[in-house]
Each structure stands twice: as structure tokens, then as C-alpha cells.
Amino acid sequence: MSLTNEQLQAHLKDPAVFCCRTPKGTKISADNLEDPGLFPDMVDAGLIELSDNGLTIEQVLGATLLEDADALVSITADLLDAVQEPAKAEAEEKPAAEEKATMTQDPVGGSGMIRIEIGKAEKFDGLKLEVPVLAGGAQGAVAGGAAPVVGEKKVLHKLVKKHIKITDAKIGNETSIKDGVITIDKNIVKEALKEDVLVKSLELDVIHPDNRHVETETIMDVVPIATKIEGKLGEGVTKIVDGAVFMLTGVDEDGVQIHEFGSSEGYLDEQMFFGHPGCADENDIIIRCHAVVQRLTGMTRPGPLAAHKCQDHIIQAVRNELKDYEGEVVKEEVCEDVRHPGKPRILLVKEIMGQGAMHDNCLCPNEPCGVAGGRMNVDLGNVPLVLNSNEIRDGAVHALTCIGPATKEMTRHYIREPLIEGLAEDDEIDLVGVCLVGSPQVNDEKMWVSERLGSTLDSLSLDGVIITTEGFGNNHIDFVEHIGQAGSRGIPVVGVSFCAYQGQLVVGNEFADAMVEENLDAGGFENDIAGCNCITPEVAARAIQMLKNKIEGVKVLPAEKKWNHAVINENNKILGLPESKLVESGTDH
Image 1 (cartoon, rainbow, N blue to C red):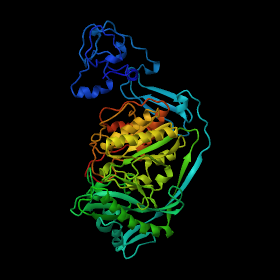
Image 2: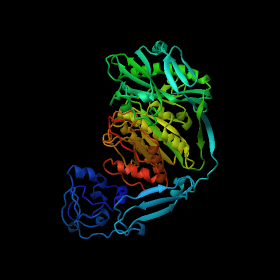
Image 3: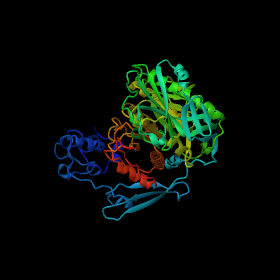
Image 4: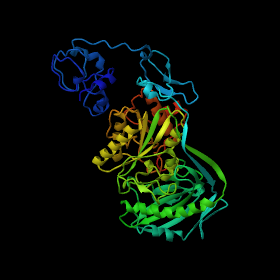
């Protein structure tokens, strides 16, 4: 495949290889050269062998071929009438780096510089550069336009989340909250079953932090207990329980786990990544709701949804008690949906599952993290839906998806999504909103939905986009297409996904050049540990910084061909983040 002129400029110093059989007397141009981006895979497949004496692309351009040459052959000096002199590099670029350059930007209150440091070079001990950072709205300035005027921040919506301390939970003869203890009426399951006939039975029990080595069926969801006190979703006051969460598990009447790609049944202390955003925290009490659904409905839309509806009936009874409970407020979290005029306009795009069957989500329910009153994104046609950051942080998404446990963003994940929290609290950017876009099953529908996302991007006059997806494989098709929708419009874009070893992208485009990895499994697999390979605060920090670098015009170095966790930890180190430790399946978390 010959090079485009744009690819040519990007690969001038890469090896020159003929893309096809080339006759004697040809004046070499981009049309005759193979794309160096394909070389790693071609070398692995044995299709080419790069010569140690091979010339670079800039050395062969314009030279005349002295004899016929076969395809996929390295171009050496003896094949040409002359070797072109490479353009002299700038002084800063003369050392040949043996280690990758690292790039960081000072945080708010810093010196306003981007630092580029090469830790080791062939002839020098090291090289450091400092480049001034453009103040706000950098894209226009980089492109030669006038920098936008930076105005005072505007608070569009204010949400107060009051975290109420809970010290214990138990199953009893009434539903109440007294003196920090949640009690749930054991007979409530009879009323809950009336929510959907597909649920044949429900069981409730309580799992305390010191007794987690208990067997569990597959973990379908972790749901916080939260309720509106004032205002609507995304503003006003919300009470949220601190110290206890609901966990939904499920099988069908034949004992088949309600799951798809991987199941998290086993011992609970081994099958959940405690402390990750979507999971129970280390000291949380878990109220387990186990559902048995009608046989053969576990892999359909109605089956899993029925289990969620019945659990939501039980949670609502607790919510009703929480509304009037005046317990200890351990934390008052103020969430502001803020606009920063003149700062780079950023949109977070979260691709959510929308393939039907077990892949759906309930959006904008009546109560935070609830089901009742919500709309399913599959029924909405998976079209892009833009919400403000506070709506998401107030529980606008109830996760119904039963994808691989490690990459599943559970309901609790959304109400404390690290990327939304990081973007919303960053004074250097203007977070326009959060766009939820479903991932359909059929390719034609994927492309249609992605085009609708492109139109949405057009209407928002953006300076940058971060695109995330849970899971991998089928949804990576539209994930990469979404990245292309942004990149083709000249919008700097960063992708966030689980890829590692098992989830490597099978499609790509020229705009998928800034990717952030979520994996924490030692082998790079979907390891069936609930919430393991999802967005964490460290992942969010890397994604936000990478987008800032792209907006400022800082070159993002190509990723290594194969997943390497050491690169992730090096980037964490640059940003002052803790080392991300990999886990082995079957160990405590």
C-alpha cells in the first residue's frame, strides 16, 4: 500500500521499502513506498526483512532506481543512482534517543511550561526542553487564530451529595434506618417479585467486610443507595449511604449464570476488585440480592432487566427511609457543573453497551442510580445523548450490562466516574458535557450512530474530546469510528479502553494515535474479577493530561507494538501518580 503525502512527511526517517514491484528507471516517490506503520506486523508475519544497510525514506526520495526491484524489499544504496542527504535536524533533536522522550505539563499554579525530557541519549547524558504553555483555548492559537478571551467561571448547576454514615445492615421484620443501622423487611421480596413475572425468586442477605470469603453467583451490578431530597437529577440535594451498597447476582432456573463473556461467580473476596470506582469499598457492608429468572431468559433483554427492577423495588424502600433519616453526615460533596469561558472546550464521550440481549443501560431514572422512570438506550436507538456532568454524578446511569466482569462499568462506577470528576474539577478546561452513545450490534447501525455523533461534535465547537468504552471486541468497531469522527474534524482526541493482550484493537485509523490503557490484569486478559479493568483515577489523570498535550500541539509518541505495563507506570511516575500494580486471577483484592 503506497504512502499518502501526509504519511510520507510523518515517516521521513523510517526505513524505505518498495510497496510493489518497481521497474528500472523509476524516480522514487511516495507512490513507490510501503507504509512503515505496517512493518511490525509484516516482520512478525515473515513478509519483509528490514536490511541493516537500508536507507530511510528521506534518503531515497527523488533518486532513480538502477535496476528492477521486487515488492517489500528494503531500498539500499546500490539500487540507486544517488542517496539524498537528510535534512539537518534542529539542535534539540540531534541526540539519538535510546529511551522514549517523556512529556509533562505543569499543573494549575505551575510555571506554565511544557517539559520534554529525554532520559538517555547516545552522545549526551540527557536533554531537557521547556516550552511556554498557551493560556486557555490553545487550539485556536496553535492554528494561528486569536486566543479566546478567558472569562469568569459560570456555575450552571450545583449538586450537594450528603454522605450518611451507616454502621450495619440486617434482614429483619421491618424496613428502617435507625442509629446508623439499615434493616430490611424479609417479606419485602414478595412485593418485589410483583415487579416482573420473569423473576421466579429473590433472596436477601448481608455480607460484612470481615466475612467476604463466601461463595457468590455472577456479580451483575453494584448499586449505591441514594435518593433525592431537593431538586431534580443533577442539582439540589442528594443523600447517599456511606458504608453499605447493594450487590445484584443472578442465575436462571437451570442454574445458568446471567453473564455473557466471562462470569464472576466464585468466592466474593476473589471475584471483586474492592476499592475500584464501580465496586464495594474495603469497609463496605454488602446487601446481596440474588435473583433467579425464568429459564432461557438470562441471555435476553427482559431477563436481566427483570432482576434489576425487582432489586430496585427493595432499594426504593430503603431510599424512602433515607429521605427522613437524620443521621451523621460524614462528607458533604459539592458538585458543580461549571463552564470556563475561553478555556479549551472539552466533551467526554462514553460509549455504552447497546447491542440488545444483555447489553443495555437505563438512563435518567426518577431516583439516583434507579430503574423506575428511566429510558433504555437501546430503545432510544443508541443515538448520542448529551448530559451535564452533574447529572451523571447524580446517578443518571443504571448499568444493565452483563459483559465481561472485569471491563464492566457498574452502576456505582457512573456516580463516581473518575474521568468526569477529573474533568469537572479542572480549571484549565471548559467541560461542555458528557455524551452517552450506545454501541449497536449491526455494523450498519454502528456507522449510522457514529455519524450522528459526528454531527453532535460539529454543533459543539470543540477543542478536544476523550472517548471511552467498556468491554472490547464488537464495540471497538464503533469506538474507533467515533475517534475518526472527531479526528477527521480536526478535533484532538484521546481514546480510553481495555486492550492489553486479549482486547487488542482489530480495527484502527490514523486518528487513533493517543490511547490510554485500563488493564490491570497481569496477563492482559478479561480475568472475571468484577471492576478490575475499568477507569481508575490514575487512568483518568493520564487521559486528561494526554488530551491537554494534544491540544497544545505536543507530539504523542507511538505506543509500543505490544502491551507493556512498564510504559503505563512510567507515565504514572511522570504525573506523580502511584504505581499501578497488576493482579493475578484467584488472589484477594
